[in-house]
Image (tube, rainbow, N blue to C red):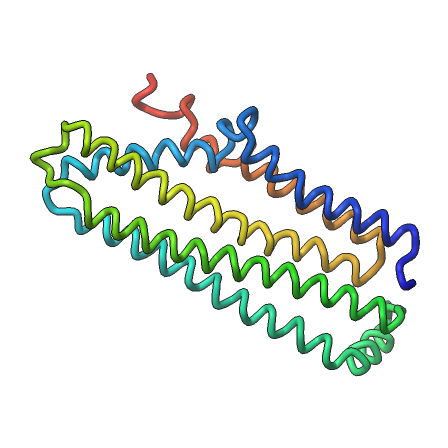
Amino acid sequence: MFLSQLDIAALGFFLLSWFGYPLVVEGRRFGRHSLNGIMHGFRTRWMEQMLSREVRIIDTQIMASLQNGTAFFASTSLLAVGGSLTLLRAADDVLRVFADLPLGIATQRGLWELKVIGLAVIFVYAVFKFAWSYRLFNYAAILIGATPPYEEADTAAAVRHAHRTAGMTTAAGRHFNRGQRAFFFALGYLGWFWSPIVFIGSTTAVLVVMGARQFRSDGLRAVSHAHDPEAV
């Protein structure tokens, strides 16, 4: 009732980008060449090297820093949800303020509420992803504590445990990335509050930036095999 055809087209493009982007970044064809995919190999190397360390304080410190970063984003997501609900509650006041701006945004109240609800849903999704990522990092810390002693580093059981722990940290990192990706898409979603055309443009800009970070960034060049000293 509130959406025009252009609004529907813009929202459809956003949803297509939301579901299509992870298929590319996390898929088998391109995922192995992305920054996230390459970092999975380094997580495995980390756990394999941990087996030969008698004192594993540095490993627990790294895990603690990962947990703290995830907890920060989880709490930030909750604040974002609260801010979105505040916009929904004060819709009349916000619309009046926006209308008084030099480039005011003219919209119906129902359409505004629909947009705000969509923004809140994105942040709720981020809360779930960051919270689950934090829990998985807790499990990874437990697995580090259960690692066999360094005298057994060459045994098959120890190697399997290292790979198991690396898989747990990778799963935690994957959910963290999805929560952070929701934040980026939320920035693109804000364009809808201006107009459907801006919505399409902002979503495209977010896709370009995220894709460049995964496949053409300086971070990727730093960890790629072509710049790995051991590969020379």
